[in-house]
Image (cartoon, rainbow, N blue to C red; front, side, top):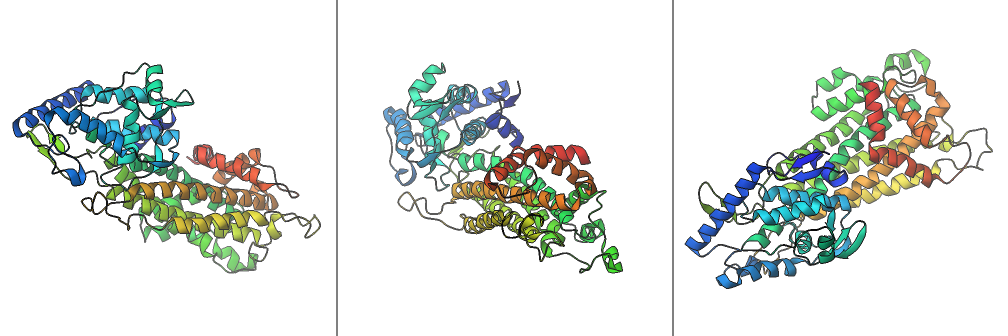
Length: 516
């Protein structure tokens, strides 16, 4: 069984996915255990020496000036968790919950939080025994981190709240007891160490970045199939064009499309068009010709989001932070979610554009005035005209989803509402940005699935034996799931079958194996 180290330094997005969606187990390396133990020792010494440590011997937020007697420090931590478990709405999906738990464990493992090793071990036991806290998805403003979601997570560690264990919802105490885990008793600073940080937005962000990388590859496959179905022109993908405007994503997208259509007999250079082989202009519409520029920009945005997320998942994000080598306890703002907020907003905007240009290709495929001889709405001319609507309505769906995304793409990170009596007066709204990015992603997966359906239908009229090396594999996989549309049937089920190919990564993996 694969093991993932929670060491605060080396976690990757692929590790997060392996724990969140797979059966990988989490372990705490011995060196990390020693680091955590030393940090806790230093914290306890500092408290004895200085007497005043924010969140340990004081209240929180706007109550930070209130001194708390030593005898009440444990109660202070318990009260913090209970009072901040204020989330509402439907629970996080299981994979996001597991990612949330892993990321919190990893930031604590960095050795700057002052938590007890036993407390971290309890969180890791919950992950490995698949005890999943019920975490409402709404209620965080993204600073001081994701307080509410993390409080709901921590409640279960205390034997409170609600959890899911073996696919059944139950009280947090029942869940940990059934899993053979002893609830923790929080000591000084442990409550704030567990909830102060941007782990929910980052957990959701890690998964959406991973899925976006699969989606952008699928969008390039769909683009290539549409090119063939529409008798596209190859000039726009020539490497010389892209090397003189060398954005990395653009160069990569053009290269991928060239590989996908290699060997195709449905795509020709403009010189063949100019010779009169086709009665048409020597260049394609933007949704085809500018695909590398548009999809490449999305690739660059996804790469930026990956960089930010992978930095964040290996960061110390609570407050205050302990620096054992300097014997210091410093208050700062590493809990603020602005880096993730901006990255998720950028990702949502980039994915929206991927959906927009895909919908434009769908519209072109179903329009007999623009589709280079394909029948209206991609239904055979052999059926009685007007009796069957073909793929008319799937374009409605694509247009609806694209329009919804335009509303969702409005940046959350440009907003801020002060909290905690104006003490926490500028917040990130990063958790909202991350949740919106997920919704946009899901919509674009459907739009691209619709494009794949329509492109495959267009190829049926052209001849699938004329396809390129990569598109031939993609076409074959789609046709194994969905037969050619010869007369009207309910398209929703067809769309769902193809979107599963998109989401699972099965389509991209099979095509990549063909062209590499």
